[in-house]
Image (cartoon, rainbow, N blue to C red; front, side):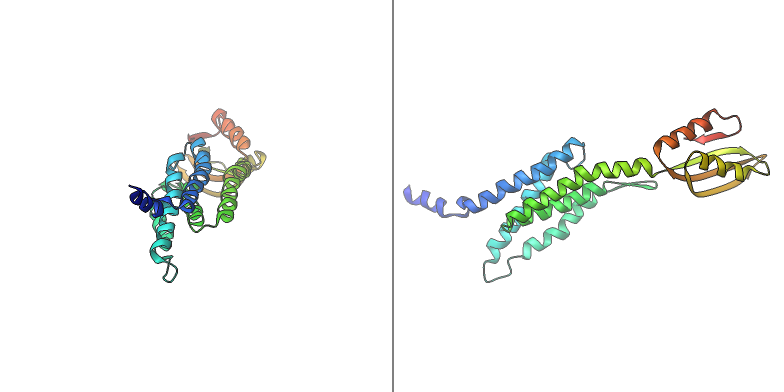
Length: 223
């Protein structure tokens, strides 16, 4: 019985260095996964932990199989390309918008954290996790602030066909403090249909849409 227990103690299962690496992968992956879970993202708490732990295990196995004299990065090298397929599944396209890019990038970065832990680069893994959390938490506020001031919306409305309608439409957007990035116009009977892509602060967009909704001269075709 003692000999059997000694065999188990000498096996890789009781390599406490590996145990520490797996625990650290769970902690670091959990920290990032917690942020994703708070934002109700597709790749949440458990998913991110599994990715980080999986990358860590693959890296450890790659080192064990490769040994000191062989290429011990054969398996680990495939994580970079393999995780790309998983990240691609999180990216969705809806008309002119693309969703899930941040989630896909997070998946890719978490795999890097797991690999760093698997190779024993604990300081790099911790610093990388902090950098990822800063990007997800702090930079999110910066992105939202920029989005509030540089929001782009499409306007589709009908206007009367008068000689000075072009100047009046331009003046309307300037007065609303919105920059018309692209404008198309075509005739529809006795009226003109304008399609304008404008950029500016969200409150300014709301005020202009309210004006167009109440205007007797213009008529919104869609919101």
